[in-house]
Image 1 (cartoon, helix red, strand yellow):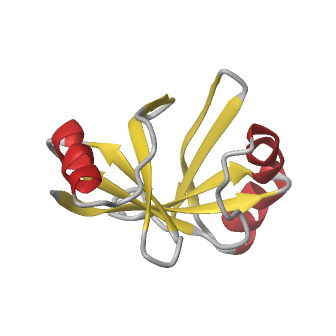
Image 2 (cartoon, helix red, strand yellow):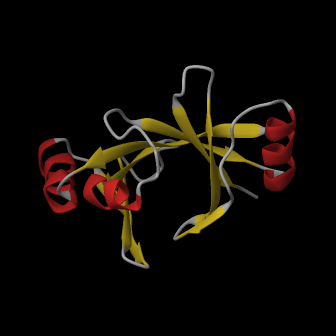
Image 3 (cartoon, one colour):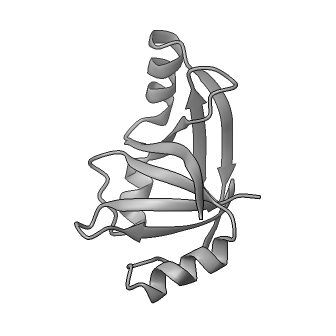
Length: 125
């Protein structure tokens, strides 16, 4: 039920410095810069019509939240339709899945593969 890879999530210590690097040095565009409940979601892409983008997450904040995620490497965010059904099917197949969480960009849940690599799924239309 995954429809596409949506974002690559990169965990950074300084979101402002990361935005400056990606926009001024690499020529990327800021697609979204939202804050909700203290969490800032910065989405950048090489151009406005890019299908896949990068989200710059605050590594310091995520460490404080003690999510259990590995923040040392980027992770993938997939888009999926039939969101709750898909999550339930993964759980029924024995995949470790997280709770559904409301984020600034929509509802999401996490899952891990057989080697404990972290992935996220965002609800899509």
